[in-house]
Length: 221
Image 1 (tube, rainbow, N blue to C red):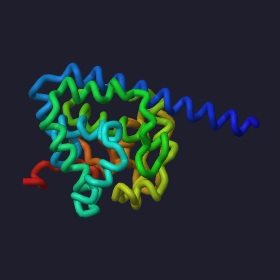
Image 2: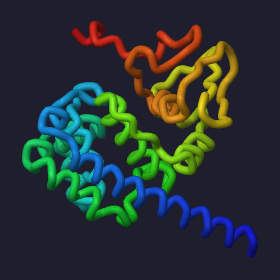
Image 3: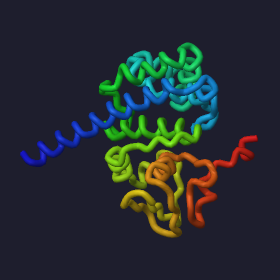
Image 4: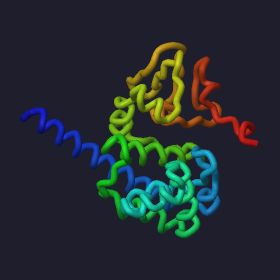
């Protein structure tokens, strides 16, 4: 019985974290200027508006509609999500895109893998895709970061194409480490971004392996 009670309590905690993250991000997105909405994000090829449009796709597309979109994309999930994000970013205004997130704060959507923590990760990481790219000093609450960081596994790193061979991640602002090898230091939320396959702006990481995880715009030219 204690195990069942603990599991329910943990699920409730994650649900509350998801709802809070969505509402806070919706408020933040409402505060962005037109120039910021059209600025690049950490998601390659996406502006802020494509990222925000993508964040609510799971709330707005039914399963049959999602399957039709996937068929239209010839079964390529990334192609489908890119097409839908670009289309919806054009079709909806900034306030409507932010509103989708706020109005669905308690929506039970979860990604194909990862369950409720996967849904939290989807919101937190895409929020950071925006705030880090824009240079905004938004700090994700520690409890949300710990839920995600404590679930770091080799299988998840492989899914996002992350190579941490010979690297030990060490958070500077909370007690968390992962991996083995040369130390790479950064804030917990920056290191979380690395585990989801992101590269960061220069100056945010410290340690010998840092350059491996820095975004170099010249590479995209």
